[in-house]
Amino acid sequence: MNDQPTATERFIQGILPENPTYRQLLGLCPTLAVTNGLKQALTMAGAVTVVLFCANIIVSLIRNLLKPHLRIVVFTLTIATFVTMVDRFLAAYMYQMSKALGPYIPLIIVNCIIICRCEVCASKQGLIASGADAIGQGIGFGLGLSSIAVVRELLGTGALAGVAVLPAAWPQWVIMVLPPGAFLTFGLLLGLINWIQQRRSVEG
Amino acid sequence: MESSSSPSAGGFKNSNLAQAWLVLLLALCFGSALAAVQVQLSDTIAANKLNETLAQVPALIWGKAPPPQNVQITPGTLNVKKDGQASSYTLYRVAQDNKTAGWVVKADGQGYGDKLELLIGTDADVKKITGLFVLEQKETPGLGNRISEPQWRNQFVGKSTAKPLEVVKDKSQGPATIDAITGATISSRSVTNIVNATIGNLRGRLDASGGQFTERSQP
Image (cartoon, rainbow over all chains, first blue to last red; front, side):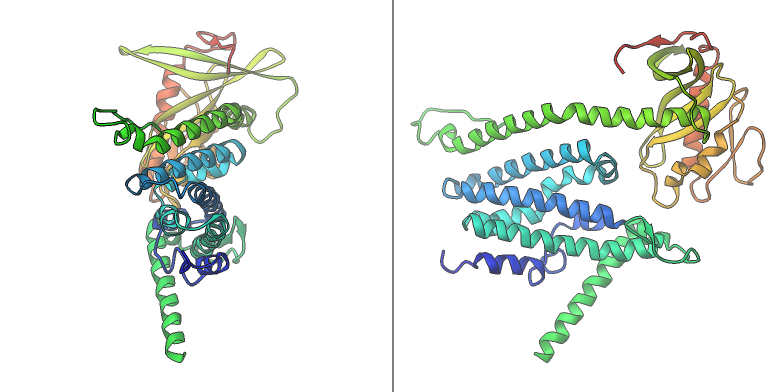
């Protein structure tokens, strides 16, 4: 247990060094599907963070009782419960957003980020490390989603979070808010980040 | 949310039930927690849906003008049997000072992407369309989803219901034509077809005194 990263390390790792979107390439379904607007992206990141935090805490609490061959069942059960709760909360208190996100909130159940963090961190480490890990990964996921959403919404509609930013003369690149725009944006940003990383490691 | 287990012979310790006790216990706890959440929130969620519909109703009858005082909205149903096919519409009677001002009907049908759900407003005798609102759509963003935009929807306002509306692409603004959205002819046609079918079913069955409208106590 001593070779596990500390809570602070877990927290920092999640944000950039092990960013779920750009470094681990996990949770790509919402990354591509709900990044056509900044508001949707932030709500999705918030929902994933809440579910990840709750699932990490529960799994960490029961980690000594887990049987190896039944652990995935327990993870899935825990995640599905919290996702359903988040889905109901959104439908009750953020009705328009719940409609905009449609099936992608229930699909958080099969989001690999959460099951990966349960397996890698929460089933091996204590409460504080697991909680810090969840928040770090959640922030990292939020950064990943919003970076794509900013590019897509700005170029596709000339607005940010629904507020017009670019002048009305901007020819709205509709393709950016359509599915191909997600692939283009994500691919280019991923390439850019890899390029920066490479240059850094050469200089270093 | 349940796990099956079959305690077979061979000692309790090795039975599936004994191994899965944690899963069973968690399923029970999580199940109760979910039930509690559902009990707490289901009314709010249902109210959200209803409010969204009711909030649109006055604008579907009176358009942009501010709705008059003393508006009553009565939910109800209309059962239509046509060509051997029975269908039931959710309907709102909109009255002002107990005089029917118009009807708002919920209609659905297949769009280009997924099911479309519309609210159609008509005058008291279903002679004229007074409004159209898109409640639910999953059409292509940037193209088909423009059916929700007021500029397009407002084409329906004031159209006579005497003959079915027709979708055209040449921007000719005839009395019974709807201009298709460029690049989204199928979405435009789907909406127009739903409107035509619904209006066809309502015509002659509703009038200012109610017609075949059945009130419902629960919305």
